[in-house]
Image 1: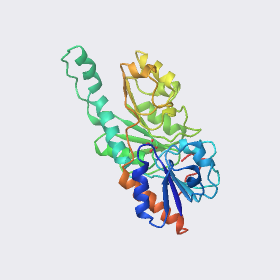
Image 2: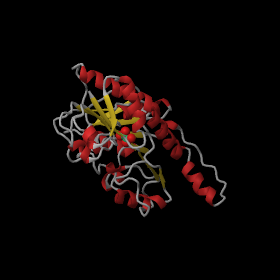
Image 3: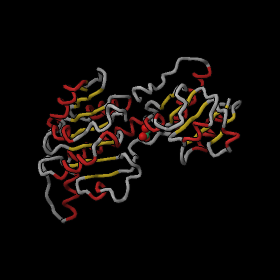
Image 4: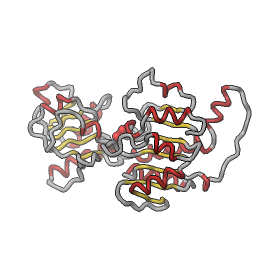
Length: 309
Ligand code: OXD
């Protein structure tokens, strides 16, 4: 069996862990020469280069070393018939829940206002509303979104969640369909976008939907940059009755170019796609389990390229 690993900055750690788990296998990083890399049985990859996919002839499966498969699905040269398994949670949901809870509290407890006040040496406490008066909307209830929604609900916020198909999550008002989305948008004081990047979700947070949010609402996007129409967001942030602020971790182009106006917008907090880095140990265990299951001919939950997740 041959496994080739591609993940920037971590490939050697992955190679060692997979070589320990499969002593009979040849495990290489994508830095190996082309002759050695070809004829792999499995690719374990995050943002692989096109040539790595094109040069394979006998792949049994690819394992995406992240939760979002958008990048892999749109890489030219992807062999369409090869199944893709992806990391499902693998410790990311806890990290994501921390990030989002921090973001919600940032607005709920007025840390955004205090940062602006500090710049002017202004001492001005703001009243704290009841949490019950701070509805939060979570768009996307996959493994990560569901955990985020539960965490916010346990923290005392009224949480509504939205997904493509109906879901049930303890303590979360789960909605779906166009009506469900409108309902969430009309109430959310903080909206969190955790949808995958698909043809249906691209630009879902557009001018119309931003306009449906209550005046002074806030947006947290740790999902995918393509979910939010950036020009519409900038306009809503600049409008006197528009959004109060946005916390953004993902962008259509990453790294976010230095001349992008979001960097310098006073109502925007930017983080560099760090909300939920894959914890190595959990992820390695999951990839080992996938390869064992594929090898044993067991049924494996794979990605549906049509749905994009
Ligand atoms: C992921 C990511 O999809 O980190 O896992 O963006």
